[in-house]
Amino acid sequence: MTIEFTPATKKASKARIALCGPSGSGKTYTGLALATALSDRVAVIDTERGSASKYVGLNGWAFDTVAPSKFSPLSLVETLGVAAGSGYGAVLIDSLSHYWMGADGMLEQVDKRSGSNKFTSGWKAVGPEEKQMIDALLTYPGHVIATLRTKTEYVVEENDRGKKEPRKVGMKPIQRDGIEYEFDVIGDLDHDNRLTISKSRIPSLSGQAIAHPGVELARTISDWLSEGVEVPSIADYRARAEGGSRDELLALLREVEAAQMSNAPTLDVDGRPTVLRDFIVALGKSLPEQPVAGAGDAA
Picture (cartoon, rainbow, N blue to C red):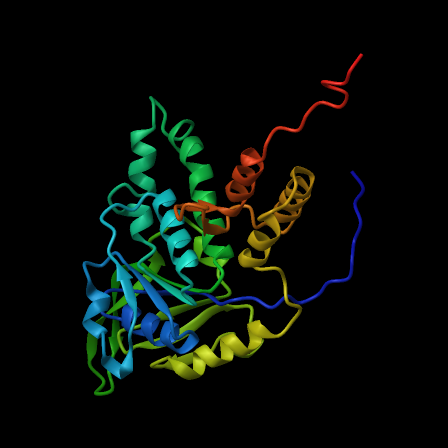
């Protein structure tokens, strides 16, 4: 294999935002504020027993929602496929923590598939499914905002009257170590709904503390990410795949893999959730078999 460096180019993309914080810090509210500012078609994957729906109509917010009861990694891939096929410009996953510690989430999946040593069997079996989930998050054809619960502890601080008082603070996000760093912007919310940017690919946001984040933050993120070279979307790849020959589909599959779009969520020809790689493979399998050269020729 030949290794060749090429000039780097900035590619236009959609927002990937993670909002971390303890209970009561306004994760759902902030997620909705950002999602509705980024798109006029918003889907909410509500794992919090319908909490997002309490905000319908507030600030003029309107969105569609689904409330799953099981949280396996592949179920999120399927849900994102349906959202992509339905054309939602922004998806709020509230919260992504459930796909780690909720019913049928990563931890339960590992236990179910473990033998005598879960660290060598369960994790090995579930790891590829978690990768598919992360790939689907990163390749969704719209903006994705995920809230993450954080473990909570109390610190004692001096208030403005000079008295010591306990304050609840969020600590480590409840998810796989490091998953939050897959996002473009990561913010930590406190109980005053103040967002401290802990990591950002957008230089102007790094280290900022933003009170009651909403429309202005969404605009800053969207403007920065939209600058750059346009890259093929899932819809572009689908359009090229439909009606393609076997050789064209094979070439397209290699292109999709090189672009790291294999696990991009989409729908198959029957409207069922799938990923882009499987969509292209299924089209190839549906083509009639090519005759072997010379077969049937007269002697």
